[in-house]
Length: 130
Image (tube, rainbow, N blue to C red; front, side, top):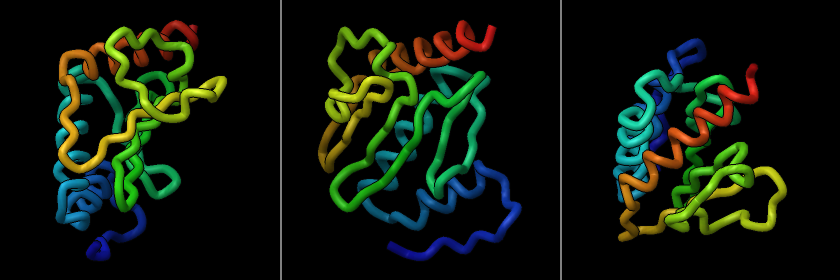
């Protein structure tokens, strides 16, 4: 992985762009794809950069986008409280709060189900913020 050429104070979106570019492999393509799906699902989503990873929020954290050698992990902050009829969650299933989706090289995500999950996470955040 190439080092990203970012400087302190850069916008979170630019940092995410740099992360995707630096990955330069299937993980960058996967992270870029899920980022686009998140933005399609919730056009008001806010991109943040916390803990050195991309974070998408709307009235609270929806999910983080961590990258590892063999997986792109999307950790939903309140995943245990979300309905997942399509069975997208495949990691951190024993947690009382979070749930995650691990994507490996060659995996395809059900775009419609993923967008539904994003919308549900945003709605949960909105209801908790009241």
